[in-house]
Length: 151
Picture 1 (cartoon, rainbow, N blue to C red):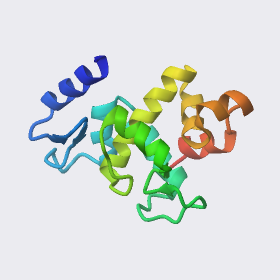
Picture 2: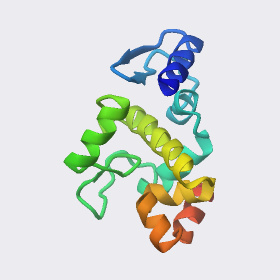
Picture 3: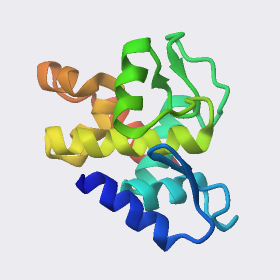
Picture 4: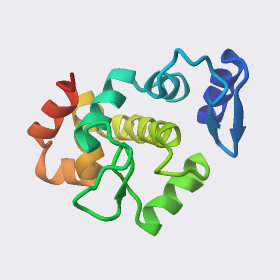
């Protein structure tokens, strides 16, 4: 319920916002805002972290060819049926190939991983490894470095 309240507060702060289910689509937000900044407003995840994840996952290419065929879009969201169903149940239906919707899901995942793991660097690693992978094998240093050194 707390998450839903935060989302509604973010929606009221941005003029012209329309949304579908639980995931706001900020298509009418000011053009000067990037997808990363819009996702930061909705999720609370730093636009710098989101930009870094997009760089690490796809080098900013929305149609990137990922090594795993289930990884899709700008943020390399792993789209197995089970993962998609779980995320859609939490945050509403989304399209991993839509950069704005994927940015919001990536931000939500980061926040969830931050709650689970307690540290920003571990939450970044969990985008690549999953929280269980980080707990079992430790964080993947090269991935954290790539996310933080995106420019």
